[in-house]
Image 1 (tube, rainbow, N blue to C red):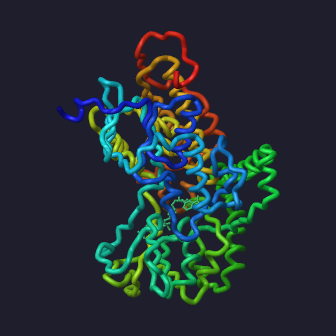
Image 2 (cartoon, rainbow, N blue to C red):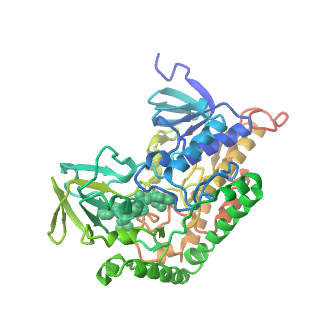
Image 3 (cartoon, protein in one colour):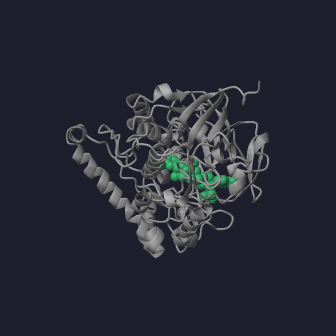
Length: 504
Ligand code: NAP
């Protein structure tokens, strides 16, 4: 008997991943009374990117009162911008408090998910066997697969090499000659941490980021007491951070020239911290602020002024067994390479694992142009919800806010399916196309298109595949309700009395 002929365990909902998306989705389903769910987690603990990114100095650059689930507040945040450990602990607490742990299959790598149109279910092959599910929710996220640079000779490097999201804590950096490749959000956090201990740090910068001061501070015990005992005070703090950050959209989307004001703040910040004009010239971006993510740091620039740091702006031509060579022919001996080169964000790796009824992988359908209705559902792939899907990234605010909006949409769709006894819902291709066209139209004129930089926000056609081009409340509004007219729906049986809750 083949595996397909045997009867695998069936679930109402299968969720891939246990980061903010997976845990948030599971918590909402459980609160709605649905316990017939499974979470598939390839690691041995929950936490997603906040479990994996343990590099020194890892922290969030969005204040914690906003970078958290609205229905699971934490009055005890210790800092305005919390560190990785605290955010990971927050996520683990959610898994326990919401009784999600018994639903998680750990060490369970998803191989292939295939839609079965006869059985109206997803067949999900994993490293721990096959299961089926009526609905499949991807909470795999965008920051899970490290992006390794395509540099000649990198494979032949004889020293120690690792990516920032797979930090090698067993490798003592004391006195080492270290090459750091990349100057993005992760690098600017770990460079100041490792600079004092390494022998020499060669920082290979392709594009300098715009950096603003980071207004971080301890949250005092009296403040925590207030947040614990007067929850409205925390709501107020959350809202004030939220609305302050929404202002960025005026510059990002409406009028990129407004970003000159932010550039002036960045220049002043750099001038205060970097006295050497040659170094300042190297570190000054030549594109409009916002075109790439604006970064926050108070200690990055000072660390680059130390005598054991060189900022290298000549491109890398090759890596040899014990050195990195730049295009001008200079060879720098190093014994360690740290890749701060980011993640496969726009080519969502989970798309390689999701197949339609004809076995076409979502990655094949998409190519480098991922498209989804409301960033969540995909024509041709029934009963599938992709959290952190195309055009659901914020350039200015909390990603968790967007994930929660998508969870609201998924909950609304599942409730609708349950109430109307549907066994299948899939977006109409023309509805998806119209939605994507609207998003692309709104992207025209934004700083991401006109700002004069190359970024992973845009694909080879110049289409924005990553960011939501508008205020985040606009995305929240349009994901508040399910929109059945945009879907092909299939009933499983005549409607009887509508069950009030998903679990019914
Ligand atoms: P990233 O921001 O994408 O930066 C990658 C860096 O590597 C860039 O400087 C890039 O240069 C460089 N790079 C890539 N390929 C290269 C090559 N072949 N040669 C030389 N340089 C190369 O990656 P990240 O810093 O890991 O951050 C990834 C994501 O995580 C971002 O979206 C970031 O916002 C997020 N993140 C968020 C937080 C938070 O607090 N919320 C913290 C850390 C990270 P170019 O700019 O020239 O491409």
